[in-house]
Length: 232
Image (cartoon, rainbow, N blue to C red; front, side):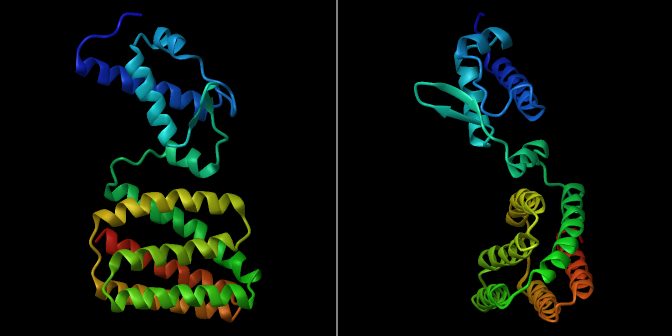
């Protein structure tokens, strides 16, 4: 295959090759653990030069779909749901609609997860959640919004983890990656976060009371409030 001429051209070819390879991995045309065709075969198949093939492999390795084993070749990785989802929902543009979709999905997951987590509750888990809220308070006092957001996410993830449902947890991890990107773009004010902190305290109270319905209801109110901060 001749190398395609022109930079713009090769950009287009790279996009095509990436899209095709990604689809083949996601829909299991290339199975987990399967070795990818070698560079020469890929050059032939996509009609591109070696540079384009290498770039495509580099990008797919970076997003966790492929792994390069020295001296052996390039292999399809075991796809965890979070990697799988992240690549399906390639959120490049975090527009209002995407953010709304993310929060709606969080509502569906976290209301159910907190109900399940309440049934698995013990003093250790409660004291860890209490500690996370303590760190949020401290971050607010220091006006460290980045740290607040990280502790906030960690509080929610810990609840979902304790639902003991691995699939819910993997989906939540994928969502958090997108939320982290959205948070980086939006500047939340500390007075908004004061209200958010209150929401976490109420959720924790309901968890301590071992009241799944109340915890789910409060989680719903809290997430709706958060969504409004992102999408006025």
